[in-house]
Amino acid sequence: MQVPLQITFRHMDHSDALESNIREWAERMDKVFPNLTSCRVVLEEESSHKHQGNRYIVHLDVHGSTPLR
Image (cartoon, rainbow, N blue to C red; front, side, top):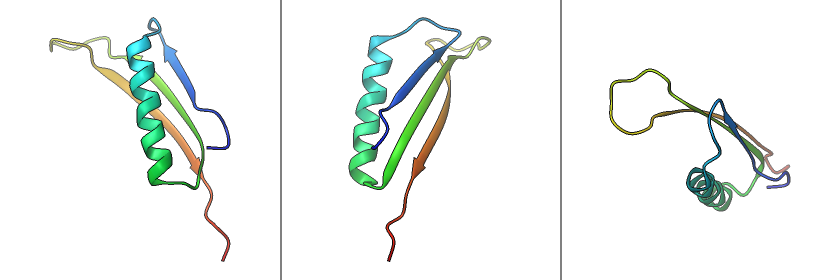
């Protein structure tokens, strides 16, 4: 990617584990799609749910370019 990965935690504390998982995901995406130019990830913890464990709302903003022919 031409622009460094941006990760934002909205209305929640920063999590090193989540950030590490996001960075690993972005590295895999960059290998599969070499024309990616930028990726922005925004995480929000889902506030009202009746399940155990944490659930998140994830917003992705991914940009890429296509090679000219």
